[in-house]
Every structure is written in C-alpha cells, then in structure tokens.
Length: 140
Image (cartoon, rainbow, N blue to C red; front, side, top):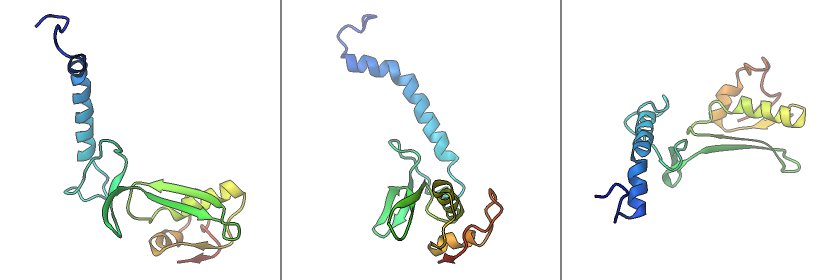
C-alpha cells in the first residue's frame, strides 16, 4: 500500500485517521454508562449516543428515551412564567426551584401552586436558597 493511500477511498482514509479519536469517545461513553445516576437501576443503565443526557423513562405508552419537563403557568392569562427540564423520572426536587424561578421571573411569589403528589413532599420543606416556605398555598 502506498504511503499516500493510493487506491483507497478518501472516506476510508478519513475513518482510519479518526479511529483513535472515536475509540476515546466510545471509552468515555462506556465510563459514563458505568457511573450512571445513583437513582437508576445499574442493571438497566443505558447510554444514548445521539443524546447522552436523556434517560429511558416509563410513559403511558411503555418506555421511551426522554426528559422530564415542567412548566409554571399563570392561571388567568395562561402565560408560561417558568420552566424546567431534567433527566430523571421523578419530580421530587422540582417544586421549590420552580417557585423560586417564578419569583425571579415575575418579581413575586405565586398566591397558589398546584402540583402533583411527587412534588408535594418537597413542598412541605423549606427552600435551602431562601429559607422560606416555598409557597403560601399548595394544592396537591
């Protein structure tokens, strides 16, 4: 084989040149999969090469590669006043940061907050950032 690559297709030459870089990426992905989130079942931990921060989550339609998204909406106008995205199935730690974000975005705390039961356990505590109860009236 000639040193310049001779008859080899350019795509093959590029692939061979990038082989060490690609091997390093695969090694990093494998290490990330080994040290997956503590909340994940290590036997089921997987990595998505196109979106490595997403997680497999149970939905009403089965399991999907997903994110868990939240939105805070002002009831009267239906304007979104805060939002959040996380790569974990549960909502246990989102309510206080969402209320803090509402206060930051609007300049005041909400009068009422409605949330699902997954968020309400956290709501009964105080926000470490502000040291206050996260909302005056919480409905779960």
